[in-house]
Length: 226
Image (cartoon, rainbow, N blue to C red; front, side, top):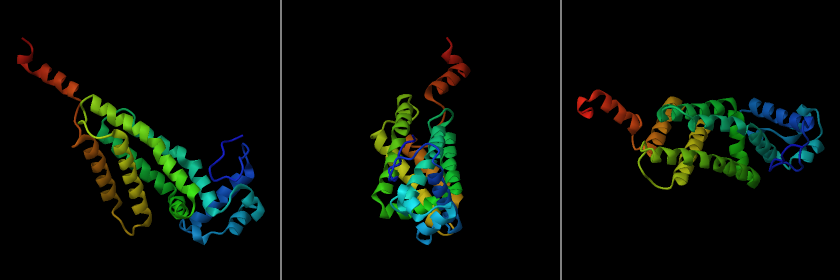
């Protein structure tokens, strides 16, 4: 058995080829229609999958539900991007790679992202997926912020979980603007979002850890070696 999506009408069986065929057909039709969910109908999805409408309704209540299931199926990619943020290395580089990785993810799935924006307004289940997936990222990002504060690299500040949530909302807004905005300067938006992350956490672009600075100063300052 595989885990049941919050938008599945029944728990899918492992390797359920009919469900997979429906989601592949949905993905193809969304690509063909620039992510406009209203331009895709259940009969087309079923026909392209080689199945009947009743087969579609066996798994999903409606198109929005199928979009929500497709979104859940690709979220592992987003978690992989998040691993960059909480990994090792200089924070400025980690944050920039994370934001760029998120935009790369959006590039690959722009058609689905646009459909999700539409489905979110119509489906409580899709809204629940959207919210809970963002919430899933908060603990690791908050832990990273608290660790940076503990080491003195970032200044003390407000609740780290709230800050993490706000920064994730900024990421969502970036992807929404890229999806719906016309002729945006993508690079400027990415650079601006990276700057907001850095200044929100560090107050400035962070330099070396204080301990590293002390070691360097003592190594070069004769007065530090009586």
